Image 1 (cartoon, rainbow, N blue to C red):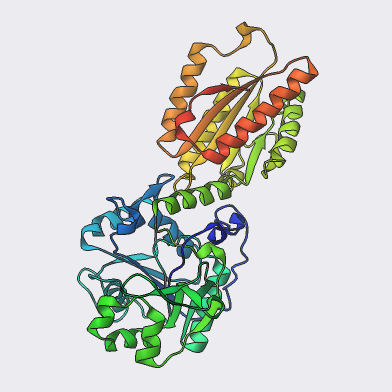
Image 2: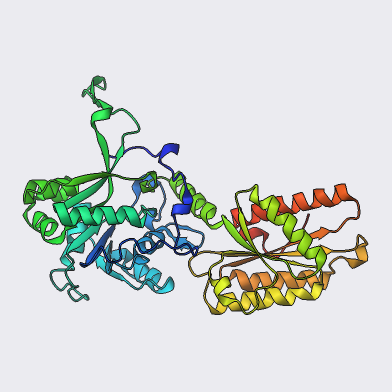
Length: 437
């Protein structure tokens, strides 16, 4: 039974997502605990009719990546998960292979699905038991996790709970409280009866199984189950006699079903990416002063800024950061931005998520002659166009160092607001512009 996504289903704290990508250690929570092989099956052969789009929802793109790539990454970054089998429709096979190649997914094997969800899952399970066309048999796991390709937000610690419970009990599954009361109607469209909501839960994904138990269940299940069934836990109970351990999951388990859910997923990713930035101050007293003010102001936007005088030669710092703010008072410092873009391109840092670079030009004179000229604006535009092809978003902001304290404070506040908006929205339409603070 599936509940409707509401605000209460949205992730309350997006910092739980993308931890490894953001440089936050997860402590490898499963290392040493999971000493047995674990695999994942992601059924992704659906047409996504409820989405109302011509493209199946798992292949819908936001932030330059298809939804299914985010889900794959969720599992791929967990070291104790060995293999991910993605089950797709025949007509989507080549598209899925292209996604794997483009985004460097290394643990994924692609299997063609069936006409229904259960047939697709069974095809995925069979990849571990026998050779399929174009695919040799994969090593058989002890535990297999079945998850929806359109649920990209699942945390490692919850996957560990599902995995260990499956090993202990034979089957396990995520549940969530019902959001709405469930009612039954008569054939004439009147209320028949309602269920007592506190007694029931919504069955969610992921679900875990001892491989032998769930594979046996699918071997024994009926054609009716294959055609009309939706619940893997029920198959394990009915055909293998295994009663699943149910574990209440976090609100991040919601499923992308409608177009509004795609927008919500994009917002979650953007919010996560905008939690921190690297602020490069330079060494001039004026730029250091501005950096200090900007650091304080952006804290009010729930953004943590790490302050550094420069980043040249600090590739490790570059590799752990998704947002950079470079403050300079000299026009020639655009060369530092050019060098930063080059390094980020060489390390392929923006492969999975867009990187934001904001060049803040501190103009020390209020005279128009000291402002940017057309040639310099053209250089910013050219550099941003090249960077955007590699998923690096380059913006420019000019702020005038006014000698009037009130005007200066107002400019700094405006700079903070623009900076926060650019990092949060990641809108490619504004790249290459020199905005005025």
